[in-house]
Amino acid sequence: MVGGNGTFNVSSDGNASWAWTGFDVNLTINNFGDAAVPLPASGQNATFLIGSSTHKDYYHIVWLDLDHNGKVSPGDTFWVTGNGAPLPALSYCHVSLIWRAGGWTAPEYFVTSETIV
Image (cartoon, rainbow, N blue to C red):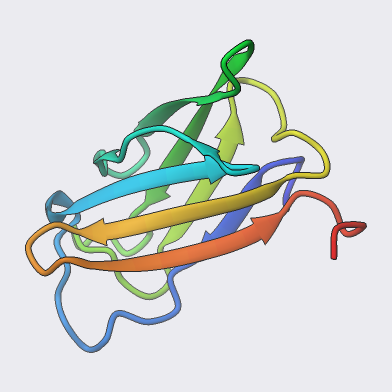
């Protein structure tokens, strides 16, 4: 967590090339989610409307292609943010990076508070 937002680095690519254009991305917060969307270009928002039937908020996932190779590769970073605000406190978050052509998913789970066990 950095400034109330989730951040994580790509640690492995399975020794293969994975062009960003082949991925979808999805986000779930506290078991509420939205449909997966195509992963946008580096630095652009993938936007999700998530919440209960009575209240929904916008959230974003941003991929940063730090080595500028056009591929999701080790060292690249993902940010998960609220809409101009931190992620909700005391929340479970699940990010899915989905490779469309091969049908595999790379999940990342994190919590927004150290008090959640």
